Image (cartoon, rainbow, N blue to C red; front, top):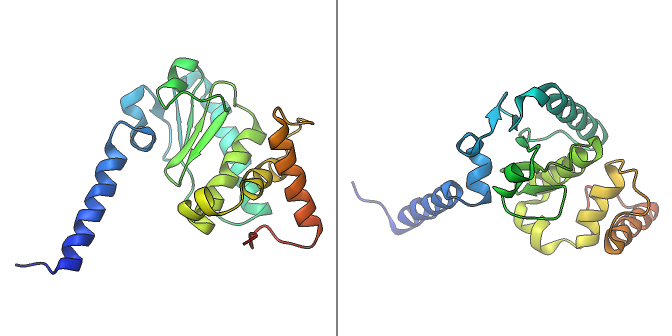
Length: 188
């Protein structure tokens, strides 16, 4: 059996994506958290300290309900990894943020990010990636829109936010919404 050039290209491209997802980078680690000491208590919740299972499940459930009720349903529920220690968090890359969302692969909640507003913020990014595409959300949409929406709609109680640029993003997003714009139709 012989494949045409486009079919071979598609197979090679799919293989490259699969190989990169399984490599020991952030995406690969989020896809296989058990290899890094986490226990998955469901398809969507994994954690390093199972004594905090109930807390993690409640944070997940409350954030998921909130985002889907207030914004839109997820196409696929996000997988969230909850790390309770810096050692666990650092396996996924050193970062000074409380959490990170990696495309639609999953969400990492670091040891200092176990807050409802942090989980909601990251689920907003997951929804943005689903709705607009990872490339569009990461590289083409304005940062004030992506981050501003996360901070404005997550219920983050910090005022001002910890870094001035984050507060500016939130303020600009709120001003943009006040002009009658809707989150589902991002600025071009």
